[in-house]
Length: 95
Length: 299
Image (cartoon, rainbow over all chains, first blue to last red; front, side, top):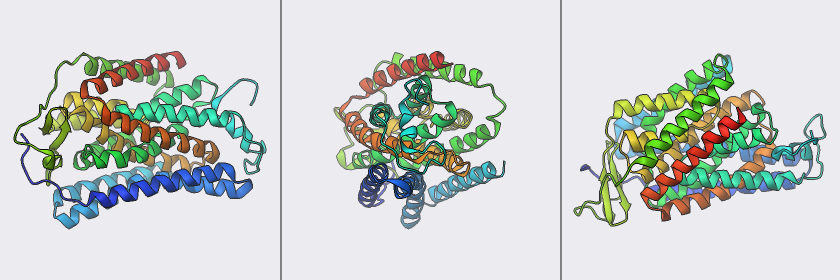
């Protein structure tokens, strides 16, 4: 049986944010395909940037929420995850 | 480029054949790419598999070089994960604490795998992936009964994750079931293998992560699928950062994949919410068998 306090992070904010990120990414992707020339390429690239950035920003948001609720163990785990991601990206760039 | 049908022929429809920056009439294959991405994202979202393991073999089988298909597969995983996120948050089936914890091991494995990716033969890797998919299908598909049965002391107000721990409670048919992941060290070791495979092959690794959480760590399959959908988005984002640095992401086919996977990811997340745990397990097992067949066929 699981015991312990129910986590109280304000997930409603994250739900709303994710909804709008999805709308923005899909909207940019549609526009990127519809618009001609370099503008279309830039807009489509923006859609890809949104898709890449959102999971990492979600982890950042979680670290902030855990920090505010005093869940230090998972603040640490989240920071370690971002450090691993950053290190991996750095190593990949160098190699 | 047009001598045989290939789904991402949208690329030729958008480029001038040299710079890739000029407008041309959209190729008829663009809608096909959107549809294929939508289907793969929906299936991947239901099973928490990510979908790249379906899309990449499909693209390769229809004539796309693997080097071009891999970034599109990761775009599918990242955008499908994004699209399914809201739904999984609303029903509180995703466990972020568990996801971030296992992703540390998976990302470490992925970095090592990426660094080793030039050493392992592609054919060996494809056969290894097929074997892993079949083993995962057998493990999930053969299990009977329900672990983490509903507990009378738990109500809807208890659904969600817990402060300071990786356990929680999930709503299921007949009530609310508490759970606590078991065999965490073994699960983390398996996750690092999942990450290693992901780094080696360029797929999200959800097809390993979901069965690991469900069958090794005894996490309810809906939580495993939702949490895996969250974590594969992180893995895919890391891979895409590398591909972006290498200039390997073609933005117009990627945009087509985003459109399809957003629609498919939303549909899959809704469908997953309506399926019972054993049904989800059977769907996952069938998908994994299909994936294994596709992998061997493309090898």
